[in-house]
Image 1 (cartoon, rainbow, N blue to C red):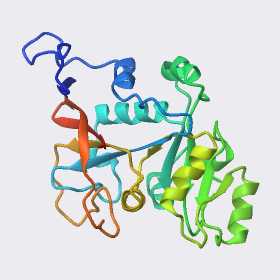
Image 2 (image 1 turned 180 degrees about the vertical axis):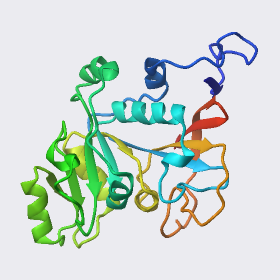
Image 3 (image 1 turned 180 degrees about the horizontal axis):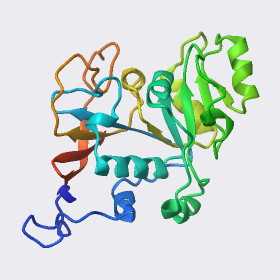
Length: 260
């Protein structure tokens, strides 16, 4: 892996030995460390992958356009987060399981005052979820279900019976994206990571609560009608982010853009 940006006196030149070596997990964790937060602060970053022609998925899943290093970064970003926020459709499509504890990050998480693994927060209006799945019955940290006040009461009861914590973040059935961020932060889950899907990311973008986008650009073309990384209504004025980091490995670009 090579760092393309920012360029510093520690950035190896292309011709130098070791420029394309595999980075350690500690090096990746340093590269993707959350910024220092104020006592009442929080930070929402998204991690997504896109093909060269803008597809966020192939045949409904992101795995076919991903790669080995992308998955190492995926795991690193999870290991740095307090909570992973994900939409219900992505839970169903990708077969989500509880986040696992990883020995390589244990000391780092303990030093940051974190538990052994991040919690998973599922955003859903309908509560159409299978509460018998391990995501709800056997997580290391209790799974949160983020929904609106008008969510079906029987489904809310089912979530609670399975051991999930129900977080109300909307007055009707729908979830208010900005309120969801605040409600999670109020529970001490301030280093937040969303893995989509596109509909949920679009809601965060529209609410202007996304602080950082970690975007893997996959060197692939798929054509077809796959979703982009963010969906839903467009914003009135495009949101401008600033590049923070660009890494490269095997033709994949691993980029990070932060709120200006």
